[in-house]
Image 1 (tube, rainbow over the protein chains, first blue to last red):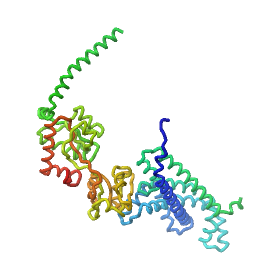
Image 2: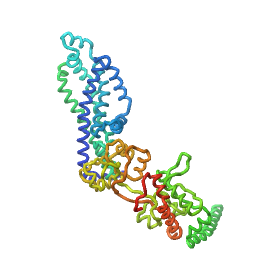
Image 3: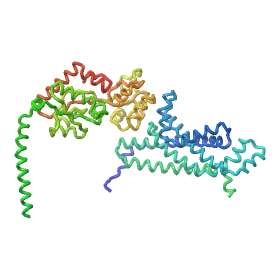
Image 4: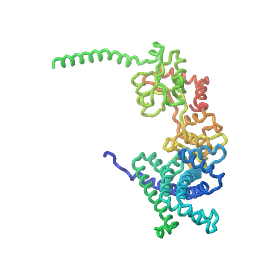
Length: 224
Length: 269
């Protein structure tokens, strides 16, 4: 191989990379938490919620799942200012991620809820729980437990999707790699570093999700 | 073997004959070197123009070249009283076309630099080409320090990005976009207050007749366009310079600038 690697030229740009990682973590931290919350709310609305709400949620989920993330991002960042809604690039990026993850998480969580036996709802009702209480205590937690690995994967996918936020000048990890590439012309090195960092972040996200799972579903070990 | 030798001999003879025929031609061009007289005699001037660089040169829907450079080329031909033969070139082959005398002039948004000055001559400037900080009329920026605390859009990795990064005050919030279109969108949607970009990009924004009209506020780098011609053509150079100077004075160049760049000619051009 004729290419000689020179990672030393990247050293000057270490702060750019550190900032990039920090912003990617912020995006997926905030976006992931809010997105899953939105997903749970939508899954509830779709399975248990009032009848009038269901078509609205259905429309939202289908709209988001059938359009590219980049278009959603551009719509929010470049489109909304036309009607007076000016968001900073960070707000726009997080909003786009929440809306995007919310739709996918909704479908994943709904699958978990629908896989919960009907008897479990009836058990809740027989304990004089309200519908919301039944959902919260009896249905949701076992449902989440069932789909937790799928949800974790979806969050990692959305984190990779955050790479396109560099298009609206969010200075996340992909922006950092592109920036270094355009300043040093060391494309190979810059993207190798970005690849390794994304890999590490993905592993980290999965570990954090596993940790949360172990906290929220301690019964799992008892049940099996 | 024998046939081979014969072929070789024939080839050598042919090459010799060709050379013999060429030498007087080459000598005569070197000796006379008066392209202007040739042009006037032929009644045609061959001019290299761009076709891939709007608004300086592109191809219209009728497949005819159009743009700033094409208008200037036609203007020069008209003032010489000859027909213009427009030769489409790319930025890579425009100077070779001139050096090999396939064209008499290069009007192809050509900038001046020392390397080029070694191999060719330049007329007076005929078009502005610069990058700078652009903003709407109501934003007050007079020098680069004034962008402190402002959001400035720029295309990542462009010349203006590198220059702006060097000179911008630390509190200026530079937003770097992937390409010129994103930078334009960020400006038009109000995501950034001002943009650092080229006058050509600003012209592209103006061509869409947007509510926010970018005006140049601060010049970052100035590299106007010149007509390129071969060395040792003093008569042609003098004539071209006279035509451009006259066109500046009588407002016809101003008209071309307004038409393609949507901006007046800078006073110092």
